[in-house]
Image 1 (tube, rainbow, N blue to C red):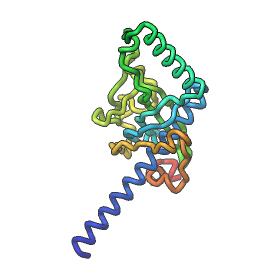
Image 2: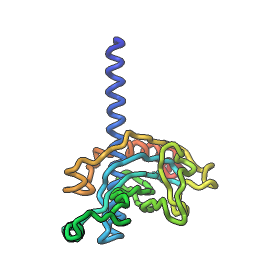
Image 3: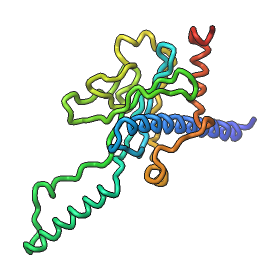
Image 4: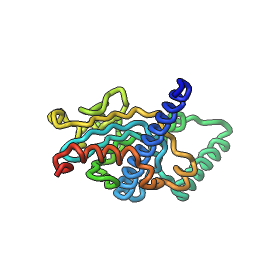
Length: 226
């Protein structure tokens, strides 16, 4: 095989790996947001951008931590209220014959995107359970953590400062195996998915790496050998 053919083959392998990793993180984000929305009716979010994830095998399961951005799903009533408030403010300023800049109006608008942390447990292929999915409140009293025992700080996976996640604690390190960190190029949801079809479902064939990881886990775990 020529050098050129080897290079092309390696590029195909790398591209397949990237596609598989992308499918995995998209599936994790969709599952996590579906869980969050089901538990927070009236305050639903749609996925915007997947940032990174890390996983580890721990106590007969594959555990995954995911970091992503999501945007609050606005209703028609919310949009109407915002438009009405803006019109009222403009009319008030026009009557005074000048632009009035109040503290409220001069304040930089809050970003509609929120950073989420999610933890999932996979005991079998296509059976991921969302353990927790929460918004990271950077201004809250508990703050946030930039890492856990299997998520590197350089990945930017922000964890709840109150420690409300199961896997990744210091006293669990000696039980970890098949550690896998995935720093991906951030994946942004297409507008047709994030706005018109929130939380699109992926088929079983799209979950390539997840299946491989669990298959390997089965082979080396006590339960898998039984």
